[in-house]
Length: 122
Image (cartoon, rainbow, N blue to C red; front, side, top):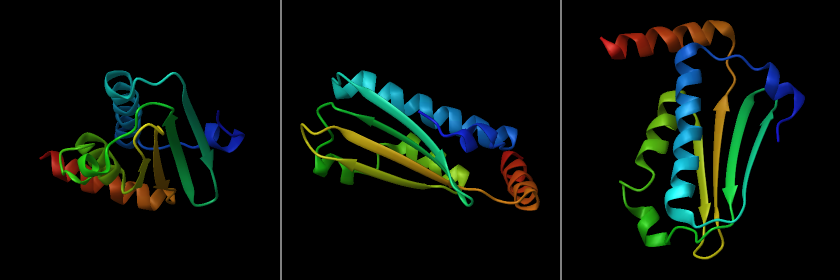
């Protein structure tokens, strides 16, 4: 589900790419590991944040495994690239919630973000 404001949010192309890849990786992890029966995707927007939440009713992630740096590495990298917060809430046999919160910046901030990330590619 998505609220109306979320459909109006525009990100630079590179940010859209990271957002899409985060979404794809989250769903891939559910298909590969969760053994879930249900998945819910929610998108909502406030004046200052765009939030994507992906939750499932699967087997969850063991707390010890969550502490490992390699666990969810790709999702963490995408969140970092977006300057976003990532919250992971998971318990064994109780499913997992991935919540990505991207700050909405004024266009001038997005220009600075784009310039910084283009410099990283060089």
